[in-house]
Image (cartoon, rainbow, N blue to C red; front, top):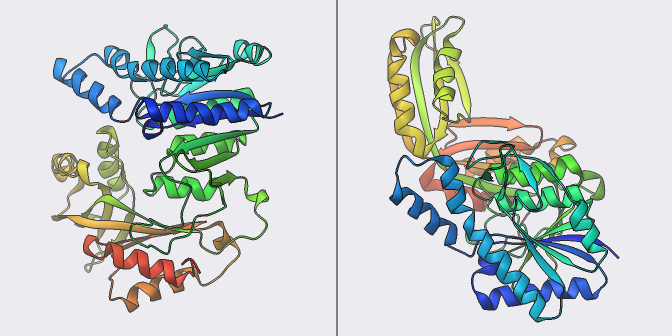
Length: 406
């Protein structure tokens, strides 16, 4: 007997037929003698509809009431899922976030989970009951409903699995696993049988849409084994596990790209202590995330050129902030380019293999692709290139690191 958390995303519970199909998957685990908790998202498109309603009611809405509205999508889904389970003979009950309860901070619309009380759910496991829990939501210390931000149901599922000390957390979605790259760009992309937490975290943060970043962080911190699999197929998916569970590491396991990037360059910035803080401090205060940063000495040797990236949809706000600190920072010229993309290679095998950067840069050079910015970590190399070269770069790197399916 195992204890399993099964999470179904919006497309997996998009209509009654899909909810019934998901219920049959849960029944299979129950019939096998397993203890099961189910976490569900709102039906596909429902959260967007609720967000639009909240914004239409009041563009400057109260964040607490916003959470009340957008959390209601999951309430519908857990009730329908519990009914569907009961209809096939499974003893099931629905639980809203405040009923479990899932304790969170009081930062509405982007709360973080601080703890989950599981005693009652575990007691009911002993009675053969399946708990159907609303994802994406919890309760603040003051008793108000909170939501975890978009994609928060993944985080709910992993957090519940950690609290229940579950054997694994199955994430059912509209893809059948984690691939070496986007199969829409590279048809020869391979599904990975296993991937490490660190690799999955890098891929998620770099643009892969399979899992939400916070859920992977949580799984890694608590050792929760995640199985990413399709709601529409019985094929095995991809296990996200500790590095020790993977016998031999590939040098590179994935190629990904992040299209929502914009490059900003400040030329002839005064070369004195505190200048970088004078630039990046105000950007942080404006909640603008800065990613890649490169600094070079200017031609005159007395000033520096500073290049960095921000999310493309934050570019206008970033330029406004920078204009406000021009007198203090004393830069002479600012250029912005929204037509860029970050392409990255990821693999824990980089720790034990040499020549990774050489292979990457040579593959791009052979395709005539100019590299504008480079950043690295222990298991990642990212480059900024012109957006027009995205697909060419992804294909070239996928082949260069021998990731194409045989």
